[in-house]
Every structure is written in structure tokens, then in C-alpha cells.
Length: 489
Ligand code: GDP
Image (cartoon, rainbow, N blue to C red; front, side):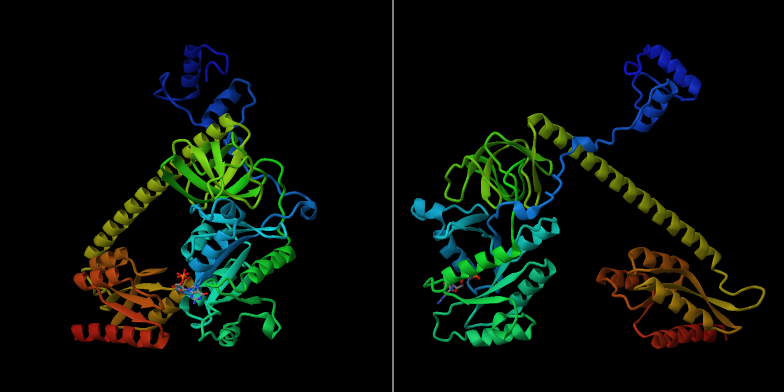
């Protein structure tokens, strides 16, 4: 700080002492804010660098998307177990150009691209099952443009079919239905259509917009129609991206392979090339090799392309991480340093908050214990009224207030309810501890009680009146009060 302010260290130290700082030494560390205040004392115009410029940012979207070139649509196949997701993906993978050029041998890298005779391409994510789709979504990576819902013609709609429907709807991703196993003698595609319609899928046969294609992953029947339908839908959706500028994308999967750390990136905008520096979470790479699913080295990966990337340095990125290209290696390193610092700060402030929370709970428990001791006199000396303690919990603030009001109306001159604590939320271990020490009865309204909390209540002999109907609750509280009444009689 002294050298930044062009002062002798001793002089700065003395000045700081005069300003009222205490226990200073040349090793003392100031926060950015304090340093800025000190600099201002010496006539500088200082501002605090929050580090924002050190992180990489997504480029602002282009003003006119419609003039950009189209990119391949990204498709996820979902459906019930054994309805043929893997079989369809295998058929499609074998039809990919890369695979045909290399004797049909492909590696699993998380996605592959199929080029059609029309010259158009489709990218398929090839992790069947819904977990991958959900993981990506939870991490904010909405990479899928179209969901293909596979339903076996001989089995129709099943629980995971409905689950897939739910996910596609929640993600607002348009859908194409592939009725699979159409080659089987007991195939009943009309039944599947009727069932889907029953579950609210607006299929085109019944005047809706959702296309339905009958296919067989075994014979390949209908598979080209499926691909064409995907292209048609992507043209309606008008998926476009700029191939120029710095690359952006998402990590589909990452692992340590024979040849080192490897991660598959699905490029969203820009074009990635060997030699580029990229950042994903707190991992970074200087792209050494780009490869497609057939293991062929690529010189560039434009939007919509899945590529395996080698060249990751210390860390491996994680599925769902956003990938951003840095202008150069230095900027990539700076961004990583900044992100690590932010992560460290987040973690330490979380720890601090947890510590404070524990401390507060401890203090409250101690206070409650002290109160409980005072509560030993349960009978009001002046009026002779017996006081019965309650803790009120409920699903929402409104219901907690209503319950409190109901309880407070009960009682008479001999016995009176006294609400020690009330709050919205589930009954917690702390509530039980507090109720045990303060000898109160817990009233819980319309909220599930965790099993371990129930057990703790039994262990500690704490009564919980658990209700979802207010007048039942009120009856129960009245009974509790009258039980105390008979105690005193
Ligand atoms: P997944 O669990 O959805 O990935 O289903 P699979 O692709 O593993 O298929 C389950 C079973 O159905 C396998 O025994 C497949 O051989 C079979 N299967 C898949 N597609 C077809 C099809 O179109 N016709 C017939 N006859 N069998 C199929």
C-alpha cells in the first residue's frame, strides 16, 4: 500500500496510527475497502476492484438471430426402461458419417452427430436414462432442443414414460414420439397413441402438434422418417448460432482416460480449435486435441458439434459446467484464480454462517433451559391459574398464526395455555430439545414430521399434537388443558 501511495512504509504506519488504527505491523492485511479509504486520506481517487473483470463472461446475444446460420439440433432420447432407447441410439450411431468412415466403430463420448443425405446434421446425446438430462438441467445447462420420447408398441405408456413427459414439459422442450418395436406381432401403435392422448400429449393424429413416428430399432424401419421429422421440427424451432467468435458450450461428460484427462464439450456458439484456451468451472484447458466420436481429429468444432477435448490441466471439469473460451492462456489462468478465490470465500462464509447458527441455537437452548427452571412454578402465584406450555409449528406463517389464535382462545381461570414459541416449518430436533426443557407440548399443523424427529420426541417424552384439521387440533389442545386441570383438582 505504501509503495502504491508513494510513501515511506514508516511514514504510512505512523499516519495510520494517528488515524486511529491499532496493533499495526508491516504484515497487517487490509480489506480492499479499508485500503481504498486510506488511499483517499492521501488524496487518491480509489475504487475497489471486485474482480468482476477477472472472470470470463458469456458474450451478449446477437441482435439479429435470424440472419445466423442454422446449427444441428441437439436431441435427447427418453422413455421407459426396455422400450428401446439404447437400441435406437445404436442404430443412429452406426448411421453417423464418422462411424461409416471408420467401419462403424465409435467410442462413447456422450454424444454423436448424424449427417443425413440432405447434408443436414443432428446431434444425439447418448446417455440413455433421465438422470443425465436432469443433472444437466439442474446445473442450468439446457442443451437439449428436442426430446424423442420412445414408447414400445407392445407395452405402451409406463411410469418412466410419464416421468419423461414431465421432464420434457418442465424443461419446455418440444417432443417427438417414437413408437418403437413396430416389427413385433403384438405391436399396438393405436393403443399407444390413445394412451398418450389420455395423458395430455397432443399428438398430430388427434389434431395436435406432436409428431408420432412408428419405428423399429431392430429392423431400422421408420428410422429415416424419425430423422426427417427431427430436422423438420428443428427448422420450425429455427435453431441458429453464430459460428464466429469465441467458443461457448457445456461439458457433457468428463473422465480420465488412457491418454489423459478428457471431456466432451457440446459447442453452443463460436468455433473451438486446437490451441484455444477454455475455462469450465475451476478447470481449464489449452485444447491439445479435438476428436469426434470415431476418434478422428478435428481442426474445428462449430456450433452444435460434440467434441472430445484433451489438454485439461490440473482439474477435470464436471458434466453441466459452462465452457467459455478465454482470449489467451493468461486470461484463462486469471479467471480460474478468481473463481477459486470466490469459491473459497463462499465456503468460508457458509461455514461462518453455520457456526453462528449453531451458536444461536445453543444460546436459545440455554435460555430455554433457564426459562424452564423458572417455569417450575407452573401455577401463577397471584391468580392461582395453572399455565400449560405449547410450541406451535405449521406449514406456513398463516396457519401458524391461526393455530396460535385458536389455542389462545382456550382455557379458563384455572388453566391457561401459554405459547412459548411459534414458527412456520417442520418440527426440528431443536424444537424437541426446547420442548423437553421447557416442558411444553408441541402442536404441529399440516406439516410432515421427519422420522428421526419423531423418535427423538419419544425418547425425550415430548408430546406432539399432530393435526391437519383445525377443530381436531383445538379439541386435542382443550383435552390437554383439562388433563392439567384434573392434576390440580
Ligand atoms: P432401453 O432400456 O430403453 O435402452 O431398451 P433397450 O434398447 O436395451 O431394449 C430393450 C430390449 O428390447 C432389448 O432386448 C432390445 O433388443 C429390444 N428391442 C429394442 N428395440 C426393438 C425393436 O424395435 N424391435 C424388437 N423386436 N425388439 C427391440
